[in-house]
Length: 106
Image (cartoon, rainbow, N blue to C red; front, side):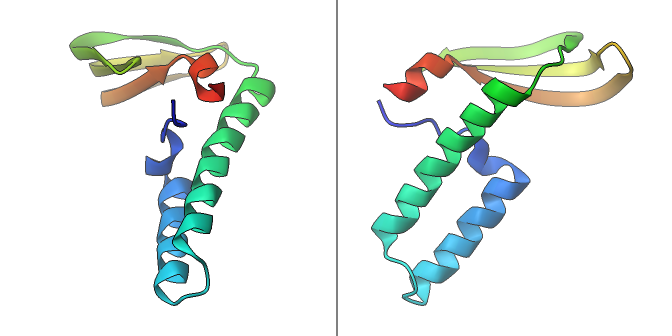
């Protein structure tokens, strides 16, 4: 199974994608190399989150929508509350995408 493209819609992922697209269009990079960079980006983000994030967060709210497709869960919460040991954040609407990280190494 190919690496999930989880982090490409983050701000840093979109900036990386735009930069790579520009470099491919100007001939600085080959399309194949740009794809390899994006795949490595996804793997690096996964490894960093697994090894460096130590805090836990409790999430509550109204579950508006949920779906499971291709081993990926998608949840849409309304009036979500994120709590950790130090703070609490209220968010009107949040989309959570989750998958089994073991599938990334296959």
